[in-house]
Length: 175
Ligand SMILES: CC(C)(COP(=O)(O)OP(=O)(O)OC[C@H]1O[C@@H](n2cnc3c(N)ncnc32)[C@H](O)[C@@H]1OP(=O)(O)O)[C@@H](O)C(=O)NCCC(=O)NCCS
Image 1 (cartoon, helix red, strand yellow):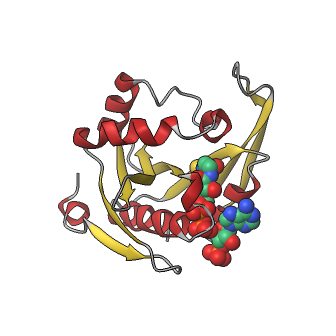
Image 2 (cartoon, protein in one colour):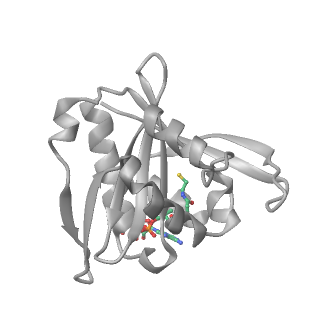
């Protein structure tokens, strides 16, 4: 982890409706709170990940290969954003998930903005984000932050709970 990244957290943000959330770098100590957060999401919210992120072993591996920011309100973990860095350290894949109660309140924009800053500090050149093609909110949120459609993988997601969905890959170059 770059020192310049670790120095920036924790940081608090006030949402437009006055609620305050605190963003910090996720560690193993956050995994119980993460599990509770994930249990409240739907299978569709998680399908784009194509991995069972509720599995503790996958969570531990994720923390080793990605920088993960988590957002807490006074009661619980309410969202996360992560960037997983490629082996050549030029590219990163962004993931973000916000709890139902916090959507459309500006938290996604804040967390994606924070993870973009982290990606710049890590000197990444290109970022991608994956989502189901019918996750219209996600597509809108990333488009507003400068991401554009890169490719559409037809029928790519085929899980027991989410059948034959197209996966949209969006990308953004970092200057
Ligand atoms: C996509 C997601 C992260 C957005 O987070 P959010 O907190 O609801 O988004 P915000 O309130 O910060 O809105 C961000 C921007 O996207 C727009 N937006 C958000 N949801 C939208 C929707 N359903 N339709 C249209 N625009 C939408 C907002 O208008 C806002 O634009 P602005 O910055 O110009 O005001 C959230 O809906 C989510 O967790 N979805 C499920 C998981 C997922 O799809 N992740 C994406 C794969 S990486």
